[in-house]
Image (cartoon, rainbow, N blue to C red; front, side, top):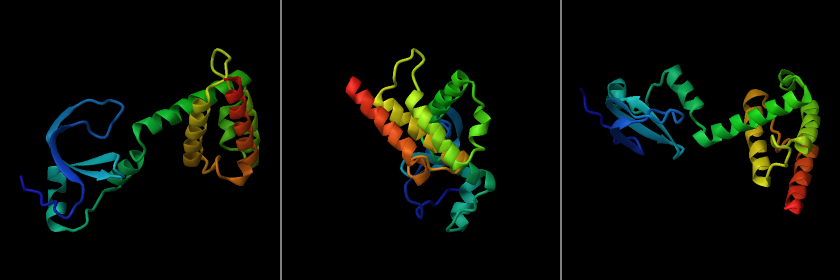
Length: 181
């Protein structure tokens, strides 16, 4: 097997055993030596040594396949961010079920209709036992929904002027939670 000259790359390391870019399974897989390049100081993107050897030896810049680039895009968010988005989507689905609304319609609505929906959502959302969510939970739910809507509908539910009233409703709810202790 050819040796890799990775001196031109910053933040790389070689390992023989690693969990391979799948934080959900968190299992160790015995593999051939990997060359790992750190991206955004959080995500490790791993390439098999024998796959990258010719690229590292012969070219200054790697030639990535479309699958490798898709993998980079899919793994750009941390495991905790993905968990937060999934939890927010579950809360949204539970809200739709409780209100007997069609969840599929929300992504097809205009920004104005989605903003009006969020005014009601922030005011009415509760835990399964009927209690208000904590302030940090409400902020986490909004963060998860922000990520979800940015990726699926291209809406920015935090900074877009169309969502000003819904964000004011969230602030009022957070103030109410703070007062109630």
